[in-house]
Image: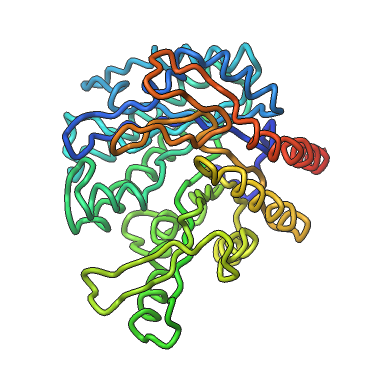
Length: 393
């Protein structure tokens, strides 16, 4: 079984991600953000937009629930059209195998779940391989921690459970481990990116023992999914360090929080630390914490702002990334996510969160460049891609 401690080599350091969430929401309606953004229809022209910015590597997502028809029958046709476009345009595609969904014929907490995912994952790699001769970079499960939080602890998304978050994490980790084994059985030139949010929580009142206790407990909880995969916790799942390849860190403005009230353990309150606060830590501190713990290459697999925050966010995080790189941080990519606007998960309003916006009620979803954001980011794309290619040589 292969083990890859080596850094990845993407076509471009700066990457673009396309929203592709497929969960069943609280109204028991299946989302399809790929359809909502019409990226599956505009894939070729979207890639042309990416290339005009200097982006040659993109993040895409398959829909397990759409592909898996049951009884070992799989239909990749919708996504094969995108795979073909990636091949002919020489665009490197990082594919999520699961972005918050699963087939409705499967009981999430059954023994069938991990096995079914592994079978689907193996077939996905066989399909992807027909369109690429290069190393495949694969995200087995997107955000195990968040998916378990929203679907297993709060019951908002399927499987609509409460207080079963850890149990849900275990199922997703079992599925991940079996999928990696099944994939390596048929293709050893596959690298895995394990994507999860990175968070910083600190007491607002440093004299509060309750807030300090919450902060201390969170240090371990935020790494639980990666620790499961590596076998550091719950070793009965079959985890091992060899399964922990590349770490994908999702990082947004709201991923730094003050703990403002911890008197009631059942109702702990948090508050986003303002962007201009001196109490915010740098991305370098995040990267150092992750590297000290795991000694693995890291990619910022999702980041970005929305509305007027976009320009400020990119103007802050990109200089921080350059400092981190200069200091030797093991950072090998940064992905704007989403790169094209998307509707909000809850009410469908446009979030204006990419480099290209939509106009409300426009059924065509025409892309309009957000020039203020692009003007801030463009010089960094050029510089970071140049540094990355120089290091690769």
